[in-house]
Length: 455
Ligand code: LLP
Image (cartoon, rainbow, N blue to C red; front, side):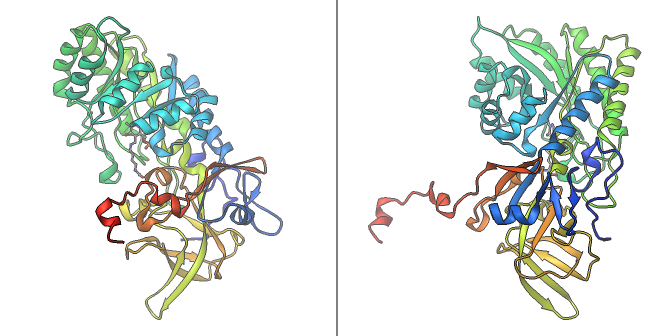
């Protein structure tokens, strides 16, 4: 891989998903990498490593790109909602709220985090293919929209929604049967998927919901997958959604919202070439408008649900370089102080990233290393082949594009505490998730009496 040049940004700065590094990345006069006006080696000293860093300007720029493109390219009303599974915290929720976006959650944890961050029920959406009664109740009580995924959701709601009280606001998720080119684990729109109602089932569900006095079916939803670079699948999706909207209307439902899900990819490596947020919205907006026009339907509110493309490129993780093992003629393993517990994507999806030494971001590579994590697992490898300048013990290395599906999918494997997360902005930094301490990992352990007696 050619050396990463963090200062080389796509000309279209308004779409952060097109850049490997956050849009505020600069290299100072000493040739050292700064993000959000902060020198990364200083952040490593101040907060320790591994450290998740989020660039507030990149997040806000992505929010604005979604909001403004929807306004520009869609004549009806619209709302972008953040898929908080990508990275959920009170601070992130509050940024989302301040940008006027909504938020989707899939668990009690994500719901309460969003509400603590100021997201109110009217802009909150609950997803999930196996929602608990507790999750459904929290959503209902806060007047969030519940995206029903299967009959069980309807059965539970029917039992818990008080008969003479406010109606539950529902959106129905359907499996659109659209294939797209992404990793098989993160494809959701093809027919063999655990999510959503089959298209040939929805008529029956529309009839059932018609008789439910406690419910108001306000929208339809579909999500076809994640890290998608093609635009065609979303054009096809518009047809499927609008056709279903027509069917719902015939049965007597006034569908106000169409939610096209998320899925726009980001640039992890130099060869990745995702569309801009603006182009993605333009295609989606035009396809929905045309499909409605063709059927003589008025424009619904257009909702989209980005996760990765909203926050992925705003994030990076910094690590310290540790041990080195040279196997002559085979490879050099360079180990860092984190790995699969803070970034499980390489071991799960064989995902590729870009990285550089924070104090030598522009220097040409001198060696090829295999960058290994510190976990007890041979597969804990973040990079099979990383070309970088020579590094010494303690040097700080940055891995870009870790703002989405890293912290949120992290674990405590090997009882390794979770890293801290900070937000950088205008030369300042704030802690938004403090570093977990090893002792805290014992918090939930319980020693039964008969074992204590043996000690
Ligand atoms: N809406 C729904 C219903 C979803 O299931 C997802 C992602 C999104 C929106 C947001 O999609 P995005 O814009 O982030 O592509 N862990 C995987 C990604 C799983 C995506 C799950 N659903 C990864 O690390 O690649």
